[in-house]
Length: 352
Image (cartoon, rainbow, N blue to C red):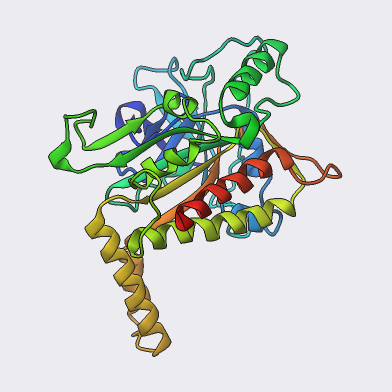
């Protein structure tokens, strides 16, 4: 079977990362995210097929397959795609290739803190870039769980992660803000802590300064609200309400699964360009009105395929390096504790 491939020279650094390890790449179109990973994460994605976990699967970025990072194999350093599948569409692969790389390098058992550096692996997972449909995506990474290590973690790792949880909101609330980036406009670029591309960046240290009493300020910063102020009526309130709808649906899905997902994250994305956000909401309203009146023409579906509708917001669950299904052990209360408290904080923004 012929294999499709990318060359390393064609790939670019992925610049929409709000948190996590270094080494994340993207294709030139920006449609894909190529993230170094362990075989365990690949195995978790490939376990979601057909109707199995289908409700939960709607909250995952589409899994496209795996890449072998052949950095030492030839001067071109080709990255070979070995499998493609979509977990939300009947579990059928687009090719009949395997979903894992034979003889893929094994990550060593010895552990040392990565401090956000690239993990030691030649295996990468390929996912849809959920930020791609947005003009100026505002991105927030919320790490879930009071316990952040799985059963295979060595003592040194357990001690380190327990200390992080103790010193942050992870232990008391079951979540912490791991990082975010918000669009502040081209006019602000390069000044007052704004990056050259117009974003304010918040790294992991920002989230670690927050306490249970101040953690709502992190979400105020994400939605660019005044301190203690409620979300006013308008497009932004619609965004928050949609996130809450998604969070409640995800909570319900997880309450009906038996799994353990340590150090997984909620990834929030919404349109940061106010004009684009307004246009996206207006277009949705127009489509709903036309659909209710039966005004769609036969060519509308073809037009929609050619031009993707502008995005308003999106919520996904990401990072499954330490995730597995655990039949007979009940729902993942470690994860759900953080999810429920995240819901409470967002509800508070609407009521302030």
